[in-house]
Structure formats: C-alpha cells, structure tokens
Length: 252
Ligand code: NAD
Image (tube, rainbow, N blue to C red; front, side, top):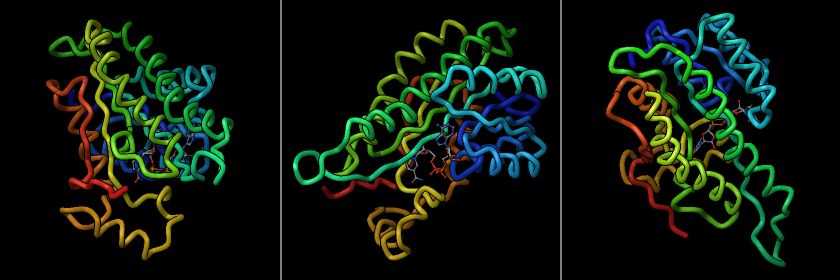
C-alpha cells in the first residue's frame, strides 16, 4: 500500500523506533496518529508532523479502542498499524542468585506480547469493514519483536519470551487476516540507538556496536523506519519476521 493519503496508527510513537516510523510515514504522505502511554512526548512529535497524539496504554482494550476511534474521527479510518510500544528489562538471573519475579515477568509479557495482540485484534476488526484498495488490500500491520526472540541473553528471560511470542503469532495471524486482505509482518531489530538504549553507558553502547559484523555500529531509528515503510509498501511481504541486525549473533 502506498501510505500517501492513508491513516497510520503508531504505538509507542512518542519515542525511538515508533517516533522515527511516524515521521517516515508522514514524510510519505500518511496521516499519522501516535498512541503512547507518555502522551506529552507523542504530542510534541504529532505537532511536528501534523498528526494527532492519543494517550493509550496498549494493554487496555478501552484505550486501544479509543485510540482507533480517535484516529478514525480526526484523520480517517486507519489502514496501517505499527506496533512499537514496548519495554525492555534486563534483570536478575532465574533462581537463588536473583529470582526473576512473577510480577515482572507478567508485566513484560503484558506490554510486549498481549499489548501487541490487543492492538492487532482491535485494528483488524475495524479494518475488516473498510472497502478494499487496489489488489484487495484493506490494511497492513507491522510488529516489533527483537533478536532477543532468537538469541536471548542472561537477564532477558521475560523480554525474550515476550518477543518470541510476537514472532510466533505473526504467521498464524497473517494467514487468518489474509482472508480480509490485511497483511502482517514483524521486524526483529538488533540494537538501535533509541532512548531505550540510552540507559547504557557510552562505552557499553560502543562495544555492543563493535559486535555487529557489518555495519559495526548500532542501528539508527531511521533504518528501522525505512523497513517498516517498505513492509507497508510491498504487497508480497506477508507473515514474515525480518531480522534487522547487521548479522549480530550475541555471545552467551
Ligand atoms: P523507547 O523506549 O524509545 O520507546 C518505546 C515507547 O513505547 C515509549 O514512547 C513508551 O512510552 C511506549 N510505551 C511503553 N509501554 C507502553 C504501553 N503500555 N502503552 C503504550 N505505549 C507504551 O524504545 P524503542 O527502542 O523505540 O523500542 C520500540 C520497540 O522496539 C520496543 O518494542 C522494543 O522492545 C523494540 N526493540 C528495540 C530495540 C532497540 O535496540 N532499541 C531492539 C529490539 C527491539
């Protein structure tokens, strides 16, 4: 789908990969609604790109529905959903050296996996009622997993599980929604320079960058956004999870 003139809903749109994608879609002529739990930052981005911001916790059915309705009322029915909302926690090991609490595990699964599913199902239900575009396409969904889904490190137990869940549901949801002309793909990023990574000291970021075979650096949010836009535009991409990681394979 050519995003120009269509409405895109970007979760986590106030920061990092979501912000970059919102900007890239707007630059391609899309009307963008940013849904973020931190609405102040999202509002700033929305003002800069002529879109709207909605305060939305992706784990809430009410918030998700309200975000889709707000986008539809102010911009038009969304045809594009980009799921970037997420949290990363690097915690304690499992076992007596630092038991990984059930509450923390639940929280990460709730936001990264259930939150993504919640937005997909609400978006899909609305998009199924839209008239098909050229080629029978009604909508497109881009999710965000992580290389941690395949290559999880100590401390990433909950995070890896949540992102593995996003990878695992991509194909069955894509096959299901294909009947309605809605495509679904997932991007599994390596390590990108976003506020999520800003907690790491500069030298730790540099050394992570050096572990990337090529290019030996952290990814730029604009490089994620470029792939997200390509998925929107390329109708043959469906049900796929694409690693965007410079071929990094982390040492255990
Ligand atoms: P970020 O922290 O810069 O942005 C995440 C955004 O999600 C924030 O604006 C935050 O307010 C929002 N958010 C968090 N919980 C939310 C909720 N419950 N409801 C709505 N919004 C919520 O992080 P980022 O680096 O841009 O990460 C975006 C996505 O990419 C995440 O899912 C993350 O796990 C994934 N990812 C990031 C990297 C990386 O290196 N930065 C690598 C792999 C995967």
